[in-house]
Amino acid sequence: MRREVRRLGVTYPVVIDNGLKMWDALDNHAWPTTYLIDREGIIRHARIGETHEGSREAIAFERILSGLLKAAPRTSEEPP
View 1 (cartoon, rainbow, N blue to C red):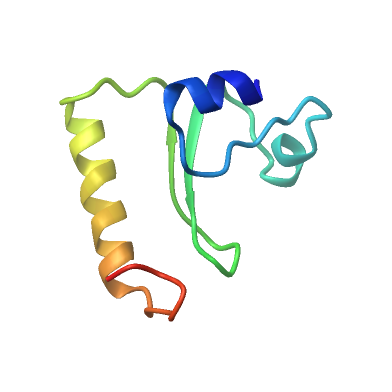
View 2: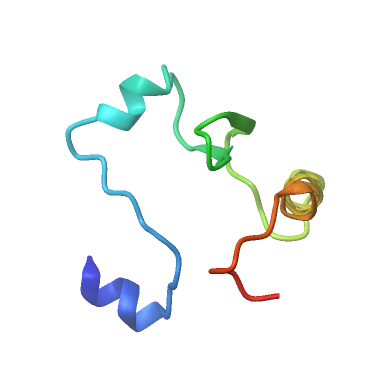
């Protein structure tokens, strides 16, 4: 998995949940499900099902993500 993450150039954290701990903690009942979780661990958005690039769902997800990023306080660790 680490090799693939590097090969793909993924720079964000990737969660492997083989023990289903996250699945259970989120009380998940469907796959795939995409979550936007803030720094405090609050689920800000959840989407059940596949989302295809350019779809209404993908555009809505990007809009929600953008809004959350704009509203988040800046820290000295983050780029401008």
